[in-house]
Picture 1 (cartoon, rainbow, N blue to C red):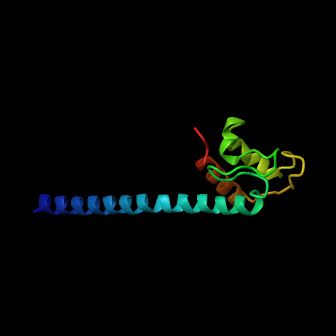
Picture 2 (cartoon, helix red, strand yellow):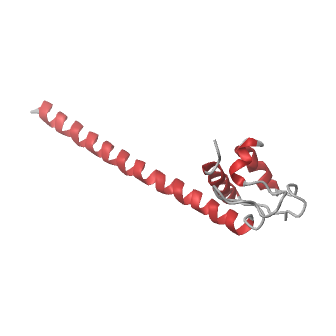
Length: 117
């Protein structure tokens, strides 16, 4: 009787663990997607006037690089410091903008998601 109870208990714990893993796994892409979407909204609001922010558009400002090609210039993770300190260099008429840590994470997630190979 003890072996059966022990096996039943083990099976229940295993089912709960599997269910938790499935639920957690399905929630993670939604969170990542919302961060990326937030980053896209931020660059649409703050950067799209000059920069190409999508996968195929063109920058309207000749000195503003397309975001999808930024990884060819430097590691995308290096943008974190620049965004935190306020990007004041770039193209000559680029406004200074200091992003919050949440905004920085979202912007980097979005930019990383559109990089050309």
